[in-house]
Length: 340
Ligand SMILES: Cc1cc2nc3c(=O)[nH]c(=O)nc-3n(C[C@H](O)[C@H](O)[C@H](O)COP(=O)(O)O)c2cc1C
Ligand code: SF4
Ligand code: SF4
Image (cartoon, rainbow, N blue to C red; front, side):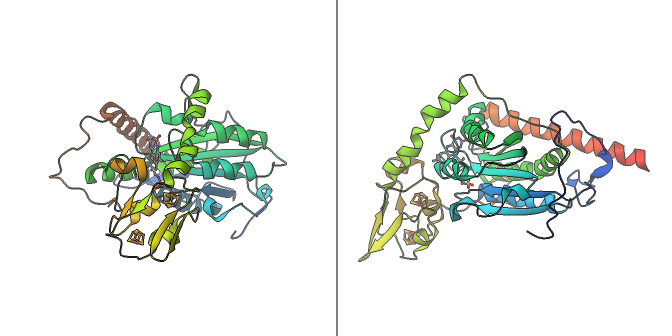
């Protein structure tokens, strides 16, 4: 970590409210600009993340950017590289980031948090998750890891869910992807602000959330089962991208034949990024999404492909996000006026 200051502590106060609100400024176009670098004391933050097809990583990168511009020392750890070897007691804040898989955290993330050592002091925890749809049932995905981390002295204070394009089920339209990414870019600085200011923000879990999440964790086992059924078609150009990028090293090639083992976590990386769309994903092949999204391509002519799918919940997500961004910018602008 750069310039780590092990003595600085976040004031761990679960009921704190906005103070020192002049700390952020807003730009002309209404986007939050946190360049002001005024949060105060240096804070050491670790974000451990897993990302199958880069959506979650893109969000984590935004967090890194905004925390850095606010005087924080930030380290990130890619969960697929293995356990975290550093001393967690050196961090004032822990973040865990993951894509939602069947209303749960992916197996690799659950297994990772089990390896985290118990903290000597109570440490605030924030959770970042991405998923393809904004249904409330997705909120339960963190129940398991939150419980595990609570036993290790990490206390959940903030939890944020970003809608990002599906890497399975169906391909989101360019306009929808543009809107999702634009929304996330505007929300992340606000969420960083809340985290750094000890303004708690948690998601509501549905009734019997623990039990529902437990049932859907069959996906962890299902991933291993289905992963063995993956096949490579003759469209393959033998670039070996899939083999080299699989987070669980589940793909091998022998005498020109591909073999998929039983360690698949259905992250979709191999089939999503395959340049010749040559991988069939077993029982879920009809749901395959192949090819990277373009996050910056707004196409005015495009037809809305999502007219009938979770229409209300997407609308609600965007409306709620817009309202939050608007009120945050109003607060910043009024603080700016007051200070002039
Ligand atoms: C196996 C699997 C299960 C998924 N389950 C859900 C789900 O329950 N709810 C949802 O909204 N999105 C679900 N998704 C979509 C991803 O959460 C979403 O596309 C996410 O942003 C991918 O992030 P990543 O690129 O960091 O892997 C699922 C994706 C996969 C591969
Ligand atoms: S990524 Fe696709 S084209 Fe490349 S080796 Fe794998 S299956 Fe073949
Ligand atoms: S085989 Fe493909 S989907 Fe399964 S873990 Fe490896 S990269 Fe992910």
